[in-house]
Length: 247
Image (cartoon, rainbow, N blue to C red; front, side):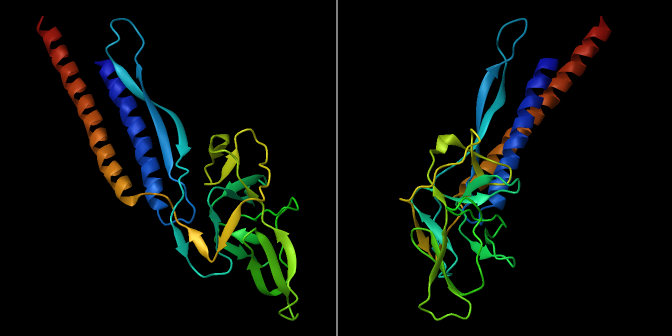
């Protein structure tokens, strides 16, 4: 009975982790540029004496769904969507370069160009983009950031920097707990001048809400099954003890 309890307990634990990932996906269904978390599970045999008649589930890895979300038109001059494949380079909380598809940009009080989450946007000059006081700001299709300096004529548009846009292979990247993506080998991806932006728009989350809700119900039923197995194993163990007492 102890093996059955162990297998059911291990299965219940993995299902709870899967439910947590699914709940996180649902919570980010409206998060700009969010990529759905996915996990890979494998059935393994329980090693030990006797026949290999028992198996348990083990999560082999956690990744992300890289498919693009829908493009939403906003008309806001600081909103950008990457046209096709590619990523915006930003600075993570650890100070290292990371990558995102969230193009809801802001200018902080200190003049830094950041995402709505507060991550500074990296420029091709190997550092975060700093915006001086301006009357108008434009982001070109190639990522060029231009401004009309404060107090200047509208025709005095000046180029400040160019947003670093990269296009590494998906299998070279990994998603962090902060929702940002990084190169698995710890290096920085090279800038790709062929990537273009669509101004005045944002990429939505790629989470399928209906699919996630169905998965939530399926996982709940699977967890109940594991609990039922544990209850049955406990009842059988009690019945076995009663038989031993009768002898």
